[in-house]
Length: 295
Length: 258
Image 1 (spheres, rainbow over the protein chains, first blue to last red):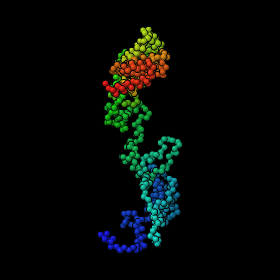
Image 2: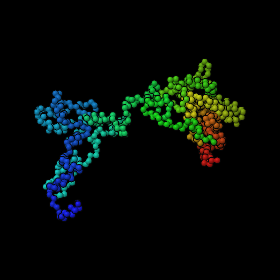
Image 3: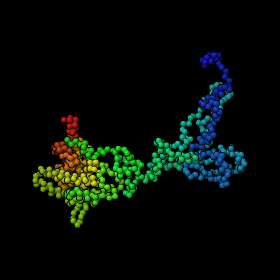
Image 4: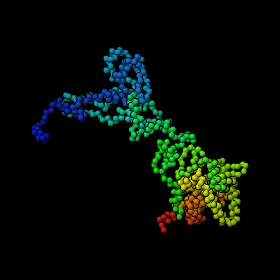
C-alpha cells in the first residue's frame, strides 16, 4: 500500500511552505515521546534552575512562606535560621529582605519578589550561587529560529547534554567511603584540617532526610559499615584495651572448636565465629612425630 | 645449676599448684586444645627469672627450684673436676660418659615433663605444639644457666633435627680446647627426642664453641646417620655440608625405594 502511494506521487519537487519548515525544525527540538504534549519551555524549569544555580549544598531558596513568617514575626528579623547538616540550626545574620515595605505593598509584591529574595539570601557556606541559567542550557535566543531566513539550512542547534551526574542533585547519595576520605585518619599534621564546610555537607531538609535514612542502611552496600545496632561505645567496650585482668575474658576468633566453657564466653563476642570446623593442628607432638621418618 | 631431680612427679605437681596456680581461673581439666584465656592464666608461665625460679630456704640452707628440685650453685670448677675424674678412666670414654649422663638426665626429666606440661597448660601432651613442648622442657635449664637453645624443626619430617646452643655451660667451664666437648648436651637432646619419638635416637655435636665456632650445633636423628655425621665432622666437614649430605642421602632413599 505504501509502495503504491509512493508510486502514485508525481516526480516533481514539492513546494514546502515556510511555516511547515519552521514546524519541522521545532519538532526536531522537542524530545522524543513528547508529541501531543504541551510545548516545553526553552529555559529550564524554575525549580531546577534555582537548584542548579544555588548549588547542591547551599541554603535553600526562600519561599513565599518564609516571607510570610518574616512579616508575621514581631521580633526584628535580623536573625534567620539557616538549616545545616547539624541537628541544631545555625543562626546567621541576614539583612532584612523587605525592611521598608508596608504590609499591603508587601503582599502585592510577594509574587514578584520571591525569586529575587532567593537570589539575595547570603550564602552561609561561603559559596555565592547566582541564579543564572548555566551555560549548558541553551538560551532562548540560541534556540530561536530565524523566521525570515530564506535558506533551509539552519545553524546547528545546541542540545543540552544529558545530566549523568545525578548525585549532584541528590546529596543523600554520597557514599560513606567518599565521606571518610575527607577525614585525616592518619593524624598527619601536614594534611590540612577538615574544613568546617565539607563539600558534601548538607543543609536543611536534605540533611534531616539523610539522618533519617542512615540507620536504615542497605544490607549489601559495601560502603556502609555493618555495625548494626552496636553502638560505638559498645564496640570498644568489647575490647579489653587496658588489659585489665578484672575484665571479662575475651576469646580469640581465630580458634574454633572450643569447649563449652570457652564457647559460652565466645558467644558474648559478636566477632567470634562459632560453629565452623576446628582449624587442624599441624604442629602438635603427635602430628609432627607421626610424620617423621627417622630411618 | 639444678642437678637434683624432683623426688617424685607428684611432688613436682604439688609445687606447681602451690606456686603457679591461679585458683579463680584454673580448673585442672585436660583439654585437647589450648584454653583461650585472657588476663591471668590458669597457671603462671613466666617464672624463669632467678628470683621466681629459685627459692632459698635459709633455715635448711637449701635451694629449690619452682618444681621442688634441690639445686646448688656452682662454678665451672665442677665441670672441670668432673672431666678430670672421668679422664682418669681413659680419655676416649669421657665424651661417651658425658653423653650418657646427659641422656639419662633428660630421660628422667621427661618423666616429669609430661605431667608438668599437662598440669601447667591444661592440655593433653600429644595435642600440644612440639616446639612449645621443647621450649617448656628447656626453659628451666636456661634459667639455671645451661645456655640458650634453639630447635630447628624445618627438616624434622626428613628425620633431621638441628639444635643450636649458645652460652654452653661446658664451654664456659672448659674454655677453648679446640674440639667439640658438649657431649653432655648431645646426650640430653638424644634422650628427650628418643622419648618423644618413642624410639632410639642419637645426637652429635657437629660444631662447638670450644672449637672456635660462635655457637654449638647439634644434629639429632637416626643412630646410623648420626655416625655418618660424626665421621664427617671428624673429617673436617662443615655443618652445612653435613646437612646437605644428610638430605641428599634422604632424597636418594625416597627416590629409590627398596
